[in-house]
Each structure stands twice: as C-alpha cells, then as structure tokens.
Length: 339
Image (cartoon, rainbow, N blue to C red; front, side, top):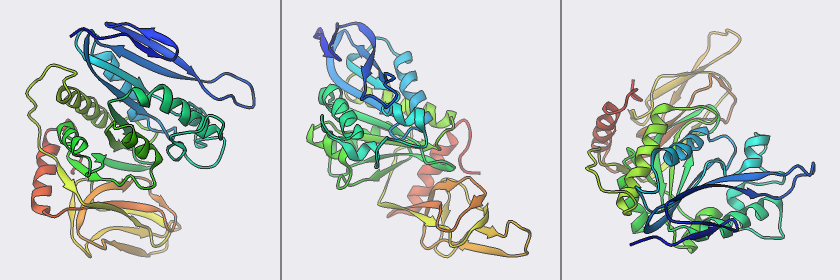
C-alpha cells in the first residue's frame, strides 16, 4: 500500500523522499541560534514510524555514528514506513560537554516537557510533540560513561511483551530489565505506546567499531521484525536475560590493575583486580567480587578515586548458559571482547 505524506517540523515529506531538517531550539544567552538536525526517510510503502536517537548526555559518539549509518545504508524504496533519525538529541550537551543543560538535571528527567518551563523542559516539549508523538517504535543509542567500557546489551521494560520480542531480535548478547519508575523519558514513550529499546555499548567520547556495527545490524533486525525491511535469515546467537546489574565501587583511591575482561564469569569472593599506591609504596589492595556474576562494564582508567565505579556485574539464573551464549557471540565479533 502506498504511503501517505508526513508533516514534520512544519514541512511536508512525500513518499519516497529523504529530507534533512533543523529544528529550532530554545535560545542561549548569546542569542546565537541553535538547531537540532533531524533526518527523515519516508518510504514509498506504508508502514510504522521508527524513531532512532542518541546523545542525550552529550558524549555518546557511538550512537551518533550508528544513527547516521542507518540513514546512509538504506533508501526510501527499500523501506515500508518512516525512519526519523536524530544523531544528536541534546545539541547543547554536545557543544558544552561536560555540561548537559544550562539548568540542573539531565534531559531524560525533563520529559514530557513544558512549553513554558526550564530550558530542558522546553527542549523535551519540542522533542515530545515534534518527534515522539509520531513514533510507533523508539530506539535510544547509548554508551558507557567516560572511561567506562560496556559490553553491548539492550535495556527494555520486561513488562512490555512487544519490547521484549524486539530486544531478542536485536541480537545483542544480553537483554536487561529496566523499570520505568523514575525515568521520565521512558514513561513518556510508554504513555505514547511506543516501545523503547535502549542499546548501550562501548564508552563515551570514543568510537568502537564493533559496537557500531552491532548497533547498525541490530536496528536493521528490528526493522525486519516490524516489517519495515524485507525479511532476511538472521543467524545470530539468542540473547540471555539479566536479572539485574550493579557497579562495584572502589574502596580506596590509587592505581587500578584489572585482571578480568568484559563477558567473563566471576565467582563471589574472586579477586578481580588490585589498587596500588601511585607513589610507589609496596601496597596492593585486592578487589574481591561481592557476588557471582558476569562482567558487563569495566573502568578503563588506571587512576581511581575512592567511591568510583570500577566493575559492573550482571546476575543470571543460569550462569553456565549465560557463559556459553556470550562466548558464542564473542567468537562472531571481528575483535574479541573476552581476552
């Protein structure tokens, strides 16, 4: 069935067209205009609207690259429906990093927004009304924080059956449950009945080609599942479901020596690293795991302050199966995560 025209940012996009827009954003004190680039690909055939966005915090460069590659890798004649790709959702955060907003708080907590509220609320209001209200499905692209490398995984609300099915299709090795309580962005997409997947991989301010390629392929898998792209055989490992994830915090400051890698299974009480005195004193404090788990996040900086997160552990019901799945997935990657 032939697609209908779509109205976005006060402009009309016709079936078979690809358009680039610049959404005017709230003004800064300098009065310099600020715009959010939006890429719209409107398929010739009717179908769902998929919104892909990244850079809420200003430093998620992997996501920026994934969103741009998706638009470059398909054309309107291939898709049914509409892709709205926003490589940089928080333009202010990218320009002024590490500051994310002119006011306190983060952009995710400002949704669904307020037309007359703070800078962040005004920005969230624009995004909600111009973009999210058009979405049938949403994919957010994240990374770990600065110097925090994350094993590729999908976060979704396990109470949403549609989101779980799409999370499986994405084919990241791990799917982790997240609650919508306290997450205003997630609450907004739930209220709009647009299932939200969050793909997180790699670390902030760095490109990770493995993570980028997996993200592009994963989004295309989702597009096939919702009939936006023609079906193709998907021969990937089936993901495993994580019950919960927690960071281990450094019990003292110093130089971190890591003895585990991403994807590795560790036992409760196992020594997973040491912290030494940076000034040469012959003192090495062992870091013991408080629980059994699989390493899904590692602090890559050797300089550690007391209380900083250093290892992120995920827990599973069946560790033997989890280890097998991750090892099988890792063998398919161009560069191994598990050393």
